[in-house]
Length: 346
Image (cartoon, rainbow, N blue to C red; front, side, top):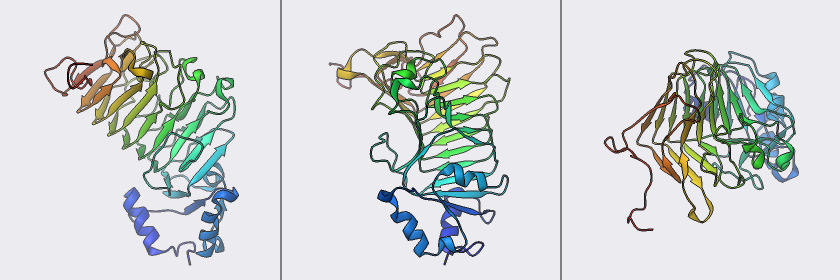
C-alpha cells in the first residue's frame, strides 16, 4: 500500500532518479483527470491504496494549493488534459511536477498525452512561475487554441520570473491562432525579470500545426523581456523550436528588454524550424532584438541548425545591434548552421 511516509520504495527510487533530489523528497501529490475517458488512472491508484492516506486531485492548481514551499513536494500528473480557467501563480520554491506520460511530447490538443492547458480569455500565462529551484518534467503546457482570435489578451504558456528553475522534456505551446501575431508580448515562453540561471533540456517550444499568420517580429516563440540589469543567464540543450509563418520579419527568438543587460544565453544542439507552406521564401531572422541601451545580450550557438530562415540575425528591429551572436556551426562560415539544399539545386 502507498501510504504517507510509507511510499513504495520503487516509487521513491524513480522520483529520486528523475529529479536528483535524493532523500530530500517532501510529500507526494497525485493528480488524475476527472473525465471518464481517463478515469482508469484514478482507479489504478485507488487499487494501490493511494486514497487511504493521499488525496487524488483533479487539477494541478488544486494540488498546488496544498503543496508547501521549500519542502521538495512532488506532484505526479497522470496522462490527460487538465483545463485550467485561471493562471497558476506558482510562487512556491522547491516544488516540482512530473508528468506520467513519459517523454512523448506533442503539439495536438485532440488526443493529449499529458497536457496542462488554459483556454479562458484574459489569462496571460497558464503558469506564471516566480518560485525558485523548481523542476518540471514530461508534460506540455498550452495557452489558448479553440477560442481562437477571441483571446487576444492571452500571452504565453509559461511566464518565467523565478531563477534556478529546470525544465526537462517539456513542451510549451502559445496561443494557436492569428492572435499570437497581434501582441508584442505573445510567445510560447516568456522569460522576464528575475529569471536567471534557467535550464531547458530536451524540450519543445512553439508549434507549427495551428498558427498560420504569425507576423510580428516581436512575438517570437521565445521572448526575452528582462527589465532588470544582470539577472538573466540561461541554457537551452537539445531544444526544438517550431513556428509557422510566411511573413519575413517574424523571428523565432526576440529580445524585447526595456532596460539593461540580460547577459548570456547558450543554445546547445538546438534546431529552429519555421514551416512555410510549399517551401516559399525563407523568413529573414531566427533572432531579432529592439534598439536598447546598453546593447549587451550574448547569444552563443553551439552545434545549432535552422531551417526556413536566411540568417541567424541580419538586422535588429531598431538601429542598435543589441544582440551579439556567435556560432561554431561551422566556426568559419557566416551562415554556419543555416540549412541549405544539400545538392545546391532546388
